[in-house]
Image (cartoon, rainbow, N blue to C red):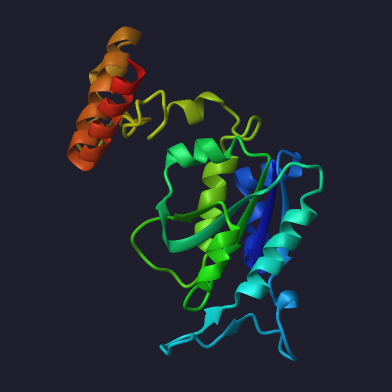
Amino acid sequence: MQVGIVTLFPELFTQFFKTSLMGRATESGVVHIHYEDLRPHGLGKHRSVDDTPYGGGSGMVMRADCVVAAMDAAATALGEDGVPAHRILLTPQGRRFTQVDARRLAEKPKLVLTCGRYEGFDERVRSFVDEELSLGDFVVTGGEVPAMCLLEAVIRLLPGVLGNGDSAREESFSEECGGLLEYPHYTRPVSFRGMDVPEVLRNGDHAKIKRWREEQAHARSAARRPELLVESRGRTKDQS
């Protein structure tokens, strides 16, 4: 996979892509990262990429000409082989990113993520992307941290990134778990401050363990994320 990141702060990503699974993915060549610094695409002596909003209001707005030029440059840097890059804008107004999106995007050979700052993007930028995504109903200073979260969710699903391929198949929101939250995990010691590992996990009966885990995943989802049960039933109905 090839990834282009359009940002005013490329240095925020460098350590992230040297560490843990992301470091392994880049070092092994599973993913190639290209940083497209927005500043060289800016205008004037100070290479400004923002300007005051028409109609008044607080803050500054990122200029469409500067941002789109950077997105185009990032897409070109990923190779002109006839395969278009899938362009993503990270904003609080985007559709909420989910594990389903992570699996979908993991199938894309090229991604270009554009990270906003200030009061956001000139509305016309939206005409040059394939989709807008958000991590949730909250606002952060810029799109860099959301971009890291999104990319980690996607890249860890690529073949060869996780040491154990079953890890991604048996976790919260996975298809194997029916889109529900994952079951509880335990390890040594057996007893800790009056709390014991459930006996069913220690008796070696794999059928009972599987049933217990399914029951726990269902109960935990019902208690913490009841909407997941509705979505899971909807997917089951669609598949029948």
